[in-house]
Amino acid sequence: MDHIWYWFAYSFLGYCLEKLFAAATRSSHRLRRCFVFLPLCPVYGFAMVTILLLGAEKLPGAWEQILLGMLAATAIEYAVHWGYERLFQVQFWDYSSTKCDVNGRICLPFSICWGILSMLAVRYVQPVLEGYAALLPEWAAALAVFLVTLDGILTARVLLTTHDIDALTPRTLLRSKRRRTA
Image (tube, rainbow, N blue to C red; front, side, top):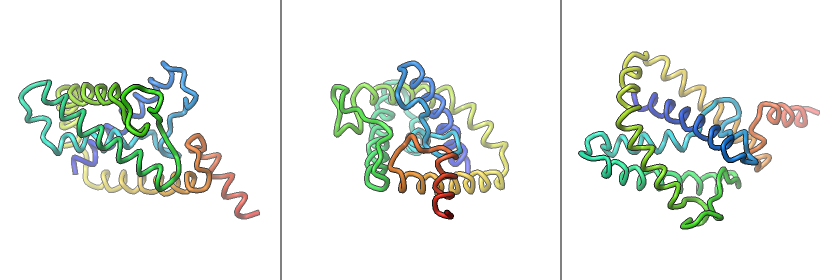
């Protein structure tokens, strides 16, 4: 049950990090949304849960944790990007203008960032999250999973009809519903 909370926490922290990065780089995609309603970026949640399941906490040194984080998170990032392209014909990110990229899906500079961030998360964020996750009741996890599933369905609907990540807003969802009933 705790891994559900870790996924939510790291997905939310990733969302916050994406918002900061978008503001700092003056990105054209400043919204940096991954869902219609929930402030979550699932690639961060999947990456960190994978890193934790692979035993990053048990590794003796920072370099080992960085290397594991680089490899695991980059693999997850590639898979998630591929999935978004195949299922929804969208790209949430494109590294093709970055040096050392692979199909625009991953690149060495961000893989290094993944490694450093994952080591910092394992050493400093995870011990705090473990304490909080232990306090949360099981029914809350079921409710959280229900809400993310519902928002995931709504998000898939928007992406399948628009193929546009900037359309991930409640307004777009309401407009498509109005067009259907008119």
